[in-house]
Length: 464
Image 1: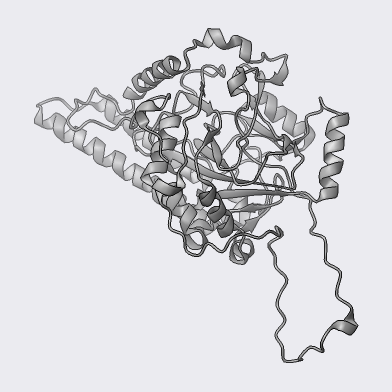
Image 2: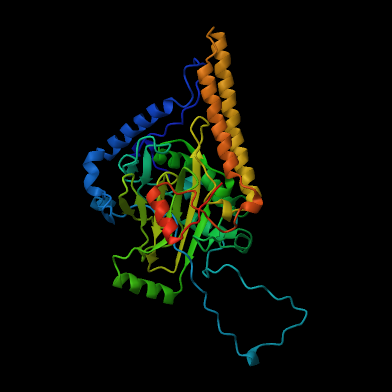
């Protein structure tokens, strides 16, 4: 059931600042965002009951690379962004004795082998419609970590919130329905992608093949929960980014071998997805697998001062929220499980007055380009149209108030929109120049991680 918002020990959701109806020209757009962030930060500190200085004992400094030493009741924290690469093979069943088989009719049409590698009995749920009163099983996270607590400057990102602890979000029935939608022949045939970072991803399928998941992530109830925790009013970035699925599979033999290695080398961190930042401001990561016996699988976050903290991922039906566009992170290998399926939905600010730092670096090579470019261009043009209309209204209101034309404010606004369009031009690369299945280094933030990835050959230089 949906939790009572009054009992939710988190920041108050505040709509991103819009241009006022009748301001004076000196009120430059976006200037109220700083006041908004300061207000939100005060609320977060009141909720957590800790000042940034008081939590120094639970974070690691640059020379340390250890786990986040959280209080006992919150030790099962927090994030699992991307699962390990697949390497599993499904054992082939031995054919029956030919002598016991009936001769085949030569006219009989052969049935193709299933391309969905996960063999399990899912209930035949039929056409289940998302119902927030039945399918949301929400409990607020016990803690959200601010960007300041992670040693980032206050202007880093679009919200004071950095990452949440895991929190229950969907019911068991909802998880089963989401799994039933993605474990289908159509989805795996049309929407399966791989890259130099991940062997198996399912993306872009939701509008056509997953009406339940599509309706869930666009429902007002789920959006209110996500926005409340993130500290800013959010909407899904694009339909293409609703329910991006990361799949990792391991046979029993591979699982046993990996677990033995982890026991012999407990201090050796093996990453299944190296350091990266996300293409979109916020992500909500939901676990669709049973991780009861899972060992490891933490996500490492790089702090603003270069230190590293490790945080745990959610259980089945639970989720975490991360401002992943501005925090570099990597996924560490998990052991003790045959499958690990996570659903990642990306979010952007609802209000056009908030800056949109979306890039396409990590998704361009694993998407149907025409669809990606269409949806990206459409929503960005809508933001631009809204900004122009708001600015035009400000100019008319100023004229009615018998005020002079504010040249400086108008030129500043024009420069901001030029930057906005220039960013779009950089992201929309000609089709023949896009390397399919490959992710470059354009998403990396820190010089240290850029240099490290260059030495290891994780990414190639990306020049736009």
